[in-house]
Image (cartoon, rainbow, N blue to C red; front, side):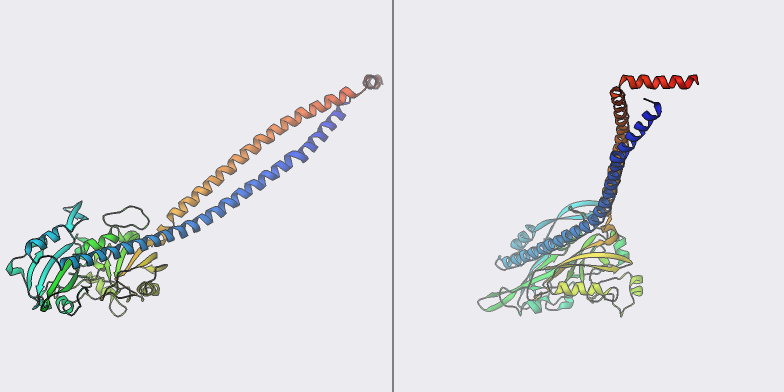
Amino acid sequence: MPKINKDKQLFTVGRVFFLLIVIPLSLMALLIANGIIKVGDTARERTVTILDQKSQEEIKVRAVNVADEVADFLKDREKDLLIATILPATDAAYKEFVAKSENPLWVKKDGKIQKIYEPLYKEMAFVDKSGQERIKVLDGKVANASQLINVSNPAATPFKEDYFTKAKTYSKGDLYISPLKGLYVNKTEFEKGKRFSGIIRMATPVFDQQGFAGVVALALDVRHLAKFTDNIVPTQSGYVVEAEAASGNYAFMVDNRGFIISHPNDYHIAGQYADGTPVPAITDKTSAEAMAQKGEEVLNLNQIGFMDPTLQSIAREAAEGRAGMKEYQFAGRKEFVAYAPIKFYSTDYPKPAGFGWVAMNVDVVKFSAYASATAKKIQSEAKSWITTIITIIIISVILLFLIMAILVRGITRSIEAEIPLEAQDASKFYDDEDDDK
C-alpha cells in the first residue's frame, strides 16, 4: 500500500477516535470539575448558614436549661427556709443546718484558682416578734450578744433591709425574697481583683398558739446563684472559673427589675453604696461617660434601649416569660444573645416575669469562626477532588492515545493483509517503470 494511503488511514482513524472518545471524555471531565466547584461553593455557603442556625438553637436550648436549673435551685432554697421554721430555735441546730448546706465554688484566692466549699447561707437567724435577733449564725459561726441587732430598724441592718417589716405581714408558708443586696464593686476595684459579694434575703413568719411569734431568715450567698452563669462559655460544653466579657462569649443573669445580678464584669452588677442607696444604672438621662470615669457602670436592660432598642425588646420579651434569640449592637460589637426566663415565682417575683432571666451572649464574628473553618475545609476538599480528577483525565488521555496507536497499527496491518498479492506486486511494477523513466 502506498505510504500516503497509510497516513490517510492513520489520520482518519485518529480523527474518529479523537472525536468519539477524547473530546467527549474531556467535556465530561470539565463538566464534572465545574460541578464539584459549584457543589463545593454551595456546600460551603449552606454549611455556614446551617452551622450558625444549629449553634444558635443549641445555645438557646442551653439558656433554657440553665434558667430551669436556676429555678430549681431557688425552689430548693424555699424548701430549706420552710424546713428551718420547724427546727429547734437553738444555736446548735442553726449552726448544724448552715454547715450542712455547703456547696462547691471555684474562686481565685492568693492568685490561684481553687475549689472551695462554702455554706449556701451567709446568715441564718431567728427574729422575735419585736424584730430583735435572738439566734444568729453569721459566716458559719454563732453570733455573740453584741452582734445581735433589732432588724425592725432597716438602718441597723448591713444592707439597710426592711425584710422583717415585710415578712411579718405574710401568711404562714409564704416567703419574702428580696432583690440582690450587696456593696457595689466599681471597675477599678474589680480590675484589682475584688469581686461582688452579696446576698438574697429569704424570710418567712412563724406562729405559735398566741399567733405571730417572729421571723426565720436566711441570707443566700449570691455566689452560689451566680455560678450558674459565671462558669459558662456558651460555645463550649465544659465550665470555666471565670468567663471573659472581652471575648464577647459569656453568660449573665438579670432579675425581674431588669438589673444584671451576675456578669463576668462585676461592675455591671446592681449594688449599693455604704449608706444603702443604690448605685444608679446608666440611662439616656445619665452621662455614661461621667459614670464610666467614676468606674460605675451598673446596667439595667430596661433602661439601655438608647444603646440599641433591641436590648430593651429582649428584656421585655423575657419579662413576658418568653425565650428567644436576637442580635444587637453593644460597645461597637455585633452580638448574638439567646435568653430564657427563670420560671421561679413567688409573692415578690410574680408571673410572668418570675425571678428574671438568663442570657447567653456570643460575639457574632467569633460565633461564625467555627462555621467558616468548616466551610474552608469543604472548599479544600473540593479542590483536592478537582486535582485528582484532572490527574486521572490526563493519565486516561495518554492511555487512550497509546491504545489508539495500537489500534491504528492493528487496523493498518489488517488492511495490508486483505490486499491481494498481485495488487502489491503491480504497485511495485508501476513504481519501477516510473523509476526507469
